[in-house]
Amino acid sequence: VHEALEKVASLLARLPGVGKRSAERMTVALARQPPLMRDLAVSLRDLDARVSLCDRCGNLTARDQNPCRLCTDSRRDDAVLCVVEDPGDIVLIERSGAFRGRYFALMGKFSPGRGEGPQNTRVESLIQRVAEGLIQEVILALNADVESDATSSFLRDALKSRPIRVTRLARGIPAGSGVAYSDSVTLAGALSARQPL
Amino acid sequence: VHEALEKVASLLARLPGVGKRSAERMTVALARQPPLMRDLAVSLRDLDARVSLCDRCGNLTARDQNPCRLCTDSRRDDAVLCVVEDPGDIVLIERSGAFRGRYFALMGKFSPGRGEGPQNTRVESLIQRVAEGLIQEVILALNADVESDATSSFLRDALKSRPIRVTRLARGIPAGSGVAYSDSVTLAGALSARQPL
Image (cartoon, rainbow over all chains, first blue to last red; front, side, top):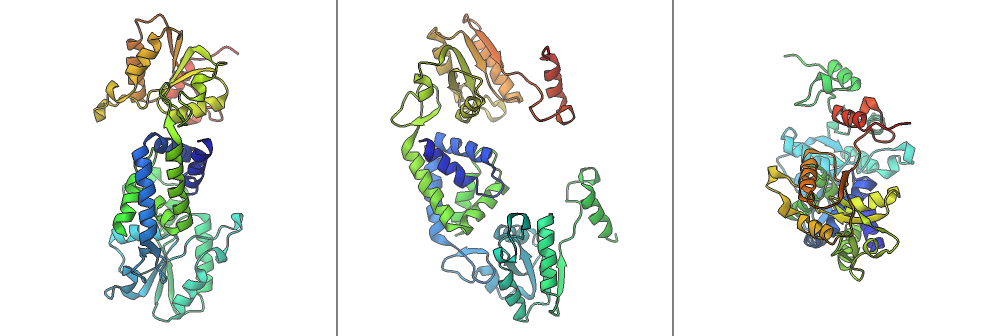
């Protein structure tokens, strides 16, 4: 039973935001609750049977809908491409209701420390997508950390030869937060991107 | 596919320390990685087939080993019983190497706000265990929050009529941390439980 517990914990620890300790606690919680454990096993199999990745943007999509709904929706703007690190980010941006263009999931970022560069992402596919000629602006909606910034710089340089705008998300104070809770990099970004009232 | 994703996310969100947002990100990560998703489904089934809860202490144990190894180990001290909230806590205390008595998992704590009282835990079973007469000290190794403290108080009163000591874990500054990182409740506890050098 020890091996079975460790196997589940090691798999859970490969999920984003799940450390070794929390994977262990999640495993114990599952082992304590057989119905939850079984439901999860069944639901994972069901999801596996239904889900695939959109060949065009990398978003999650149903197996019988590829390209995905966002790529085929004729009401969306082909001229603006929003590049995200993870397909999960697409859901969040869609929920904001503030974007009506197309998406592209990079499937990661460069992490030189772990020997991960452009080859570990879909950069080549992004450059080809831009080469199709429809896109006028690429919005880099990456995260706000060093590795994401390095990825943004690389993409900006890689797309330099194209007649398009390359922008990134504003840095600033998150809604509901305040100056007192913001670090100095955030504050510097919020100041330099200040907007007229 | 949307329902399949939401089903997995809602199950993951029932695990300890997993919020709605992180359950969603974990689900997307699983959906992106079919081998991981399949491995986890298989491993959960395997764990389900092997694991059960010890009838005596509530710890996780193999189906063919009940009572568990810790309850049957003749080298352990029957006179000291360590009461924890969750079976996962037993693993952590064992790792510390500082305890050689028996364990008892309460399977939760009282949470009056959610209408959860003694009936939601194994309190009755604990009182019976103490009534067997072997135990001389009950160590309440519960967490350091309001609900756990209420649970500790209840247990202290429930065991008052028995000729045993009831103790609880010391409050103090965690190893590797410092005064600057400790809240005032922790500091007050560390001061009142100060030890001679």
